[in-house]
Image 1 (tube, rainbow, N blue to C red):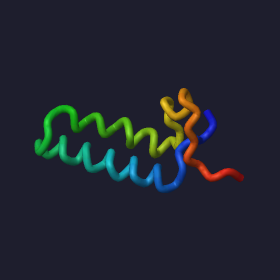
Image 2 (image 1 turned 180 degrees about the vertical axis):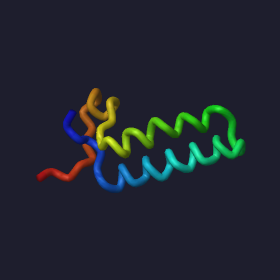
Image 3 (image 1 turned 60 degrees about the vertical axis):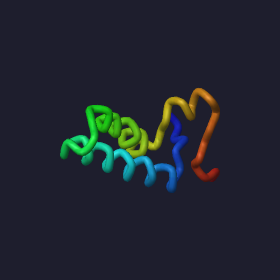
Length: 62
C-alpha cells in the first residue's frame, strides 16, 4: 500500500473522525457517528482505498 493521503487531507480526516466518534459516544448523533472510524483509520494509515481505485493522490511528490 503506497500512501495516497497527504498532510492536510490526513489532518482533516483524523479530526473529522474523532469528532464523529465523540459525538456518537456522547449520544449527540445516532449510530452513524461511529462511521467516523473510517476517516480516522484512513487518516492514520495514510491510505484510502477509493483514492487508489480512482487514481487520486494528495501526497506531495518526492
